[in-house]
Length: 270
Image 1 (spheres, helix red, strand yellow):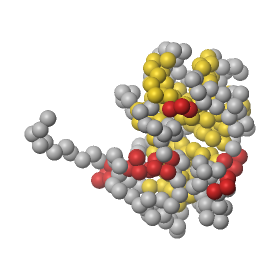
Image 2 (image 1 turned 135 degrees about the vertical axis):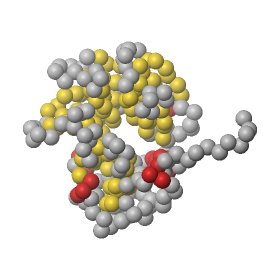
Image 3 (image 1 turned 180 degrees about the vertical axis):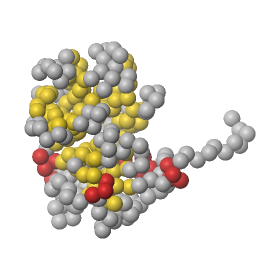
């Protein structure tokens, strides 16, 4: 975990962001901010952790990965506890405070809903393919799977698909983000372009990074944007050069002018 104030500005990236110190030894697989503070959790391939999520009160972190388990990490210092299991690596995990449930998505082609007071899932939802990404903005949940499937759920009826569509983009969906107003969602297909896709609609132009950007996250009030720059393993181990593949996490402080929407110009045309 890292705190924003612990970041170092000694080694700035081309965008002059703060560089976080004391990083994992391998590529970053996910980033997530506490909903209550500026504590940032980063997971990494060095221990094959693929995803993380916070409980809404900021007291607990959940992590899932290649060991097919989700572990619950109380920040009070207690030992981690296994709270969920799948038959294949777990790619996504999310806490749903409105339901007091944990939802997990796996490469075993299943979603599972968990009540942490029980050792077995309260419901298992079969997916058409392997789960690669999911996003929750209650009651909306969107799941992206292999073969470009996008499955939409209304969590007021979580055992039934609300809608299933095939992504209109020709590449595999890597990330999905539900809108805060639950009226839609964004998808991202090329990991090395994730920052540019975010910035093109909000920030001013920023310098292109020298390596892929596999994950990013805003803090709870949008005042800090964290992003990882590292090798993403999309081209396999044979293209990984440890001498040049530096792992970095940067913290960018958006200015109001960067993120404020531009007013529309009324041209009189429809």
